[in-house]
Length: 176
Picture 1 (cartoon, rainbow, N blue to C red):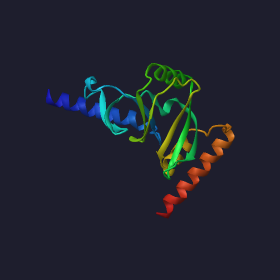
Picture 2 (picture 1 turned 60 degrees about the vertical axis):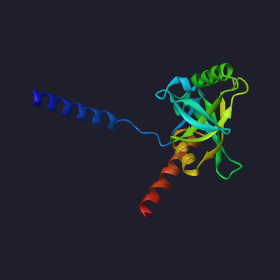
Picture 3 (picture 1 turned 135 degrees about the vertical axis):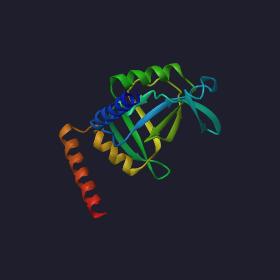
Picture 4 (picture 1 turned 120 degrees about the horizontal axis):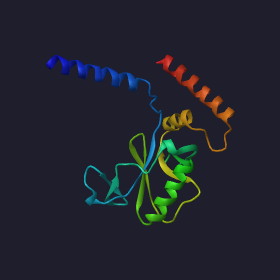
């Protein structure tokens, strides 16, 4: 019986490695999390100080990088960068519904798992654009450029930029 169980778990482990090996890990990740409540429980929310108060945010993101179709970066007031993110139709509907239903609540932005910015919802947003005002680094922008075109880019210009970035990254890795 022990041998059968051991063989089963070994097969399960090998199979999971094979399946995971085929997935491409994104080079950048962006997500937005809506303010929840302390009563939602520790499995559902996490605590974060925003605007001088301890607030609770849902662990499950409302919007993710999978719903972003284009972006534009700009220098922020504190020396790093901000982003304007254009959402697909699903993300646009989601942003419109959460912003209409949650006036006064906070929405935080995470980039690669770290909290970079927070905004207080003051009106419904129906144009499909969401802004991260600060906290984005230059390498994170390069990661986004490999995944998503810039707002206004045609496909050919984006592909050429991706090729150039990959070539530059390869050159830098050889120098190390």
